Length: 140
Image (tube, rainbow, N blue to C red; front, side):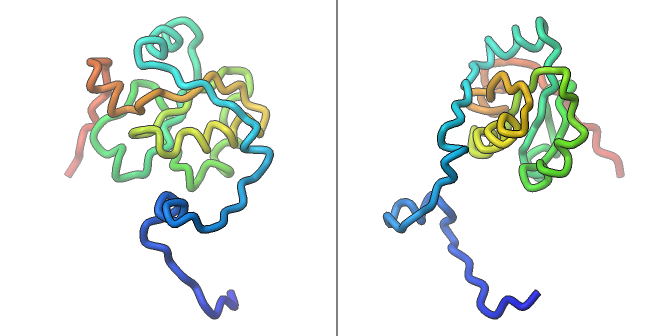
């Protein structure tokens, strides 16, 4: 590819910000507001509106359990995968603990999807409040 010097910042963006290093924020994304929905309210929305649920957790976080009828799509693959998402259904976006769902939801909203919101506290909170998850069956 021609790259001569590739660097890695171990703490990621969070640590970068902690050092007050400069960052450029895309103005389009900064203006997009995404609703944070409690597990209780999301459960009601799922029953009433039949939304398309997008789970953007990395593969290693989704190995054991997931919200029923959710579609797994790592944030990394969202641009390509979202081309197959239905435009005629509202979307809910979930992840493990709200680390990736906000940016995924902003991207989807910017791409003209009807994003109802993200799961406040993520699947971790969903499970801790006793809402059901499907358990992935492991095969040998």
